[in-house]
Image 1 (cartoon, helix red, strand yellow):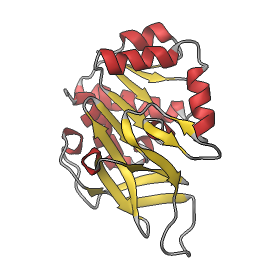
Image 2 (cartoon, one colour):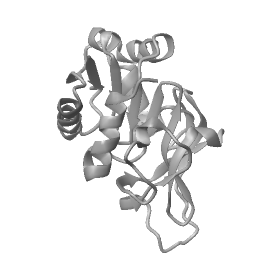
Image 3 (spheres, rainbow, N blue to C red):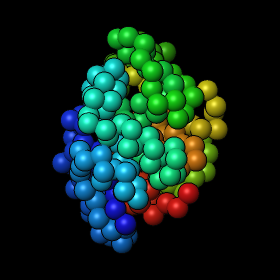
Length: 212
């Protein structure tokens, strides 16, 4: 069993690698590697796409990364490999991103990535820090995780999904902010599970054990 964390020069790969490696050891989920090799991505049993920065820059970097984009799309769309997008990696799963300029996403989850606009003007953007998850729909990834458990967020844009059934969890920031999305073999987390302590590690372990 091999989990590949895709390295397209966007994201804090060291902390993510350590967290996934730790939980893979605990649950017996095999090896975890960080890779920029399209052949490795094509062969991996599970894929993780991190992402920090702006939606257009991350999409351009992914598409310009020597075959990683095509290998990832084939692995997920054709081979049905379990996939997890983190932070902007989750946002790239949307139909469209509206950060700086309109940019097409992977269109794996119907919806748009738009700027967070809290109803309370005293709340700052970016949405930064700990917030309580509200679970909207049951999913295997929530084994041992409950509404009220904390996750760590750092973002100014969020995904507004078309199908509410694909928004698995949200948080309240003077309005709903999408936290976890999912469809088929695909999951996305707006927060950083590798920085979310016990809750994040549990979610990582559940992803590594997930058999969609």
